[in-house]
Image (cartoon, rainbow, N blue to C red):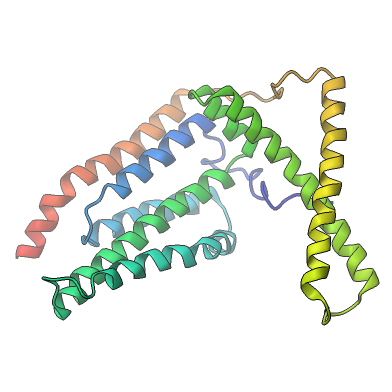
Length: 259
């Protein structure tokens, strides 16, 4: 069984992959906060943020097709939120057609860009390191122990769910070759029920095996991350660059628009 659908590019060798998970978490969430705090309606700052994020993506060596594919999964929800804002202004007092076209559309674009850039940062964060090491970094940053254990167990048991999906799909295809034309929803419903039942049984067996081997709630990691001075400097420079631009770009934009 292949399980590369989560950590597919986590083993690449790039400067971003070599950064400590704690530093990458701080950099990603700080960048999201800075970008989301941008005022609505100003589109020029997002060109700078886009160049920085695309530069990080290029350095990480993550294939652009992989990033685009993951973005397409969530993009419809982002587009729906961005389009809903201008439409929500229709019929309100004080909003003319021209004002709706300029302010509403511009604000909708800023909503889209904020959500899209935050999505890109999260994709880069989860694609440049194994998920269990990100959880370990969150634990070191103060994540509650119980939440960390539950997240780690979900991460490991999702492979069992994926295995059962592959097995039941192979068994269904062997019995019903071609497209299912009759009772399609019933067949898929029975398959989903079988997946969860078999996954539950296998999960119990795996968990009992873990307990018999001394599992106490902590997952040992032979390659523990070490926060190096270079990681702190790179993270500090990245966050400081975005923060300084966020602080000084507003007067520059106002001056540019008034000229």
